[in-house]
Image 1 (cartoon, one colour):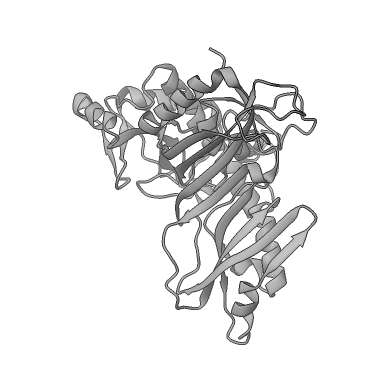
Image 2 (image 1 turned 45 degrees about the vertical axis):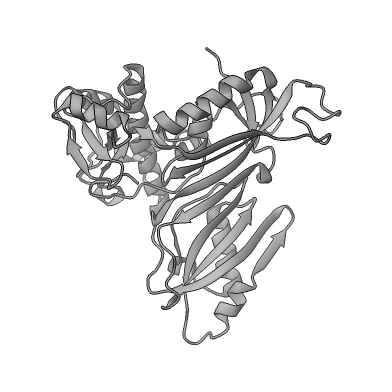
Length: 386
């Protein structure tokens, strides 16, 4: 059954993201944590602009995750506080930078003992406007979003992970197998390798969705506890499926690496068979510095999910007089996702999503099934996902 179309990112204000920090800065220490809002900029570009304005070296800053460019996003960055610059904190608090359609604004500044590290966030809160939705499809969309709150959705990596041309995984294979030279930039090498890891994961997830086991434990599965992130082997299918139905745990998929833990039995056979074409000729031991490997939940938990119609200029649901699509509707969709998850992974399960930021002509569809926020390359955790 085809899904109703909906357009996102018609403007940055249609895609609002708020980072949920793993902890609050203590108020004391040699690092200054800045909470900043950006519009129309990548996280890298925004942070480079901030550091240049404050006279700080980019290499000394810390960020928890990357955020969308075509969006209004709020997140944290940490900068060192040189003892010879007593004005830094006050200058940082007052920082506002606007250029054309872009904006950076510091909202808060607090000291902390440690530098902010990649992955140090609990998740992201999304507030998204979906436009050009067929009014006849509202009931099915509302039902789908309600179902997501209880069942979750397949936890696929989005198109951002694979680069503008969608070929980062292919490029990684080329230099990992010696067919091309590796990029000089170590960060680019990590991005490429994370795309290859993500491609393997998505392929395994697709197979588990096809056989209906993406949220149902199978004997030999490596299962993740939702509360602690702990990983264990499924040996009692009935008991573990009951726990999965209660939202206590879920199956995981491979984020390949030299130290990744493989499942057992038929699940291991499935993952190895799917991963083989991606990893043919790749020495994971030599690539250990790019990623040691970990496990990622196959099911994405969606919390605090709300959907409401956006009123037009007349104060009622529906299109404006200037819009000839009388049945067109705009929906406001809000939800919270854990770190490493993609907002449009959720949306793509309810809509045929058209990404306005990728569809420069405003006409032909550019599918984002899936896609969304981007928290940067995978970080390796012993028993937890990114």
